[in-house]
Structures are given as C-alpha cells and as structure tokens.
Image (cartoon, rainbow, N blue to C red; front, side):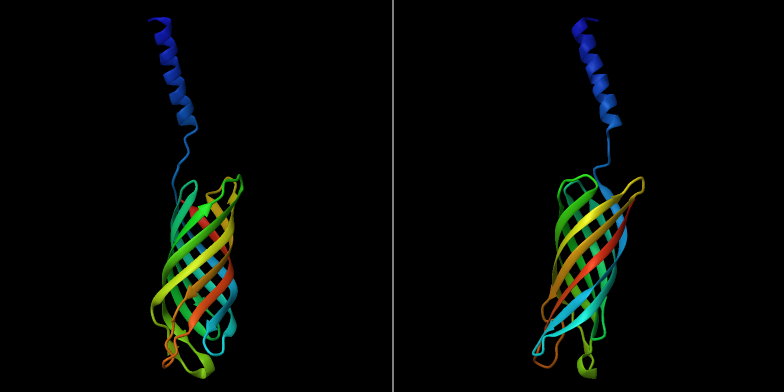
Length: 181
C-alpha cells in the first residue's frame, strides 16, 4: 500500500472511532408530571379573580433546540373546575446546565363546572391558547429534568350563562418533573 492510501485509511478509521465515541442521542422521549399554583380571572360583568391550582401530566419529544409535548391538566379552585388538553412547542436557548425556554400551546378546555353564587354551570368545550416562559434544570447522572415555568392560559367563552359567555384567563407558576426514557 502506498503512503497516501495508509493515511486515508487511518483517517477514515479514526473518524469512525471518534464519531462513535461522541455519539449522543439527538431525540429524547419523556413523560412527566406537574403541579401549578396561581390565579384565574373570569371575564364577565364582575371580572372575578380567584386563586387556582393545576395538576397534570405530559408526554413529549426533546431535540436540541425544540421540545414538543402533549399535555393534560386539571384546573381547580372554589369557583370552577375544568380540564385542558394542549399541544405545546418550546423553543430552547443554548446553555450548559440551566436551559431557558419560551413556549406556546394550543388545545381545548373541556368538562367541569363553574359555580358563581351557588349556581352550577357546565363548562363547554372550547379552544384554548397558552404561553410559557421557564428554565430547565438538568439533574446530573440521572435521566431527570426539572422545569420551573410561568404560564398563562386563555380560553374564550368557556361557559354559557344565559346570553353571557365569559372568558377564562388562568396564570400560574408550575413545577414539572420529566423522566427521559
């Protein structure tokens, strides 16, 4: 073999060894749970503000600059109780151990009830939109990520009270724990 052939063959072999040693999965699939606390405003004639809690779960895919997830939440307080199912997209900023992100979501608010002044009204299924801003913390040596995020959800005409159709604006701070498969 000539010297050029040996150099070429050595370079190809070294590139293969180095590439396989640095191979990381590009796509992470995850499942998680979350808890949130904040408030809600029901936009009708009285504009009532109430505290609210949320509980839920997520399934998603995480790639280097983007995260996509399906989410279910149960929103509750003393005036209303409802569910939402959302499809979210998160855009991540590059960093080392703490990853800031911004996200948007679209989905549906459904089921539950609204109880102003001891009168019960059923929540109707309606479209919902949300925005998120948060930080992801990597837990070293474990396949777990921890998110802290601020979130705002808007659902127009989420309940029908005669001819009135108030909107729901729910905002909270959420803690989310994700397990990477």
